[in-house]
Image (cartoon, rainbow over all chains, first blue to last red; front, side, top):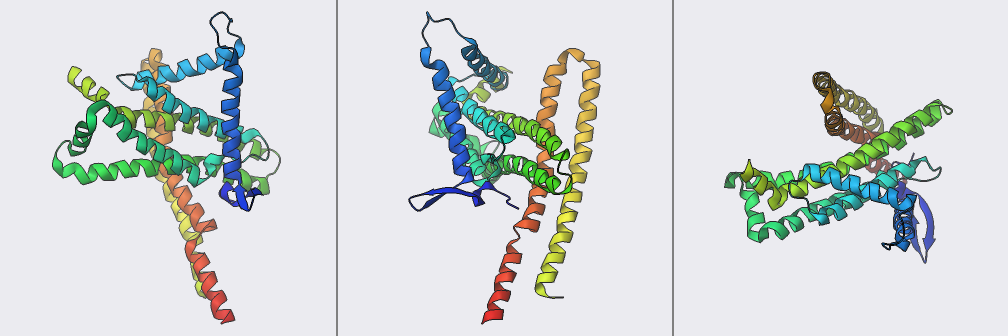
Length: 228
Length: 96
């Protein structure tokens, strides 16, 4: 049994073997960018919005609303970063219904890369809003004894983000594969439906946690603390 | 028993133990969380949307501890590093 799509070689270009993770990542990226470009091609004020453009606007506005509910000072760049993460994970999980497609999030390398993005974004957003000194001081809160614990907490956040997404998506695939051997007709379909549900929920949680981590590092939390 | 048999037996036993205990704690925790959320919804039906969204997020957070145990069990069963090392050592002693 293949635990990760890393082991499946789809084809090789010039001696470089491309595994299923890379191929499905590029499929998801092509679908997202190609679809958005196709829909927003005719983006002018005098053109009335058609149903596809309205769908896109609804998605973006929903994500923006969710972010505004969590973070005290809404930041437009947060929408770009977290929204992209969410759409990518949702797309790669929801395409699971297509036969022969292996979700790239079932590979630990993809989820570790996504978690590293979040871990990198936290200091970038934090330094951008509070300055280097203010951001580094947040590691010394509530006092200097907590410095190692804050650093450990930062690292364990990343590990738990990566393993949570990987474990959920991978477990769905593994359980479906096991059930395919036991009861091939009906039960794998039910488990795939459950996998769709968990895939969307995990994408939501990944995005929510990224928002929480980033907005707790920015000045927004300080402002909220002073107001209360 | 040979080394390989030892490793296989202990891995399989530990995988079962990991999943069973890893399911026990999160199941109790999720039950508590769901019960509390349901009674909160019963008291305040207006807040049902916010409550159920928070419930979903917290359920998935609790469930991730069970998922960690599942990942460990899967590693023990399908990608056991000690098994591979023991197989390699056995092959080396058989040939050399």
